[in-house]
Image (cartoon, rainbow, N blue to C red; front, side, top):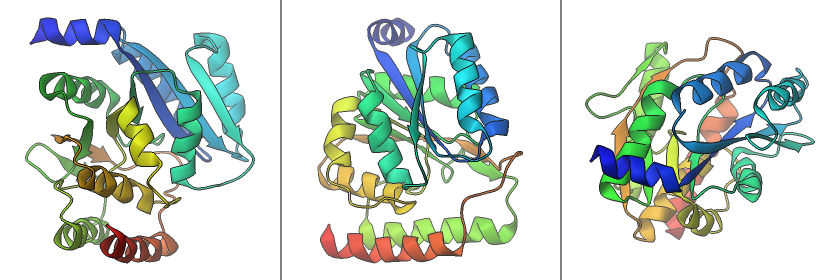
Length: 246
């Protein structure tokens, strides 16, 4: 199995898309961790920044000087345009055979998740490998009880109504075969946080092979969460839309 993994990694390239908004305090660390733990993998990091006023783009440009503009790509946008369109924008810059999407706030443990995600894809030849907090080995650290209940309740509601075949629809750590991502993303209409859920539901309806891996989600240390009441309302609207249209 190890030989198979190394053979796949040797001939495949991974494009890691990281959407950012006011992540100046986190982006340098996450880039450092990716380079530290993915030494034997051909990859590029595409930072899609929505006009952050905190200087995120300046930090990314400094990182390009350190790691090279061929390894760190900056997809700058003038303002906040939505999470879904950020992935579409990042995909335009991607040259990899596989695309990994992940958060910039260090909520995903790079050393454990990137390798595990890649290994699971090699083992199963899955079209999508998605991280889940809700199976054995997964979990959440740093959230209060209300936030945990809100997240779990949202996923249970979505599973009950949509039957997507996965336990965590709102997670944002995933690996896609590039061709699959291009196909599924063209079917989606959501632009905000509903986009993650819609991607999995559309992929499931199209019959793509989806595998899950347990991940531990750690709440951000620097910066503030972008999730608020408006995102919850958006999620519920998106749930109804997918129930009607898929």
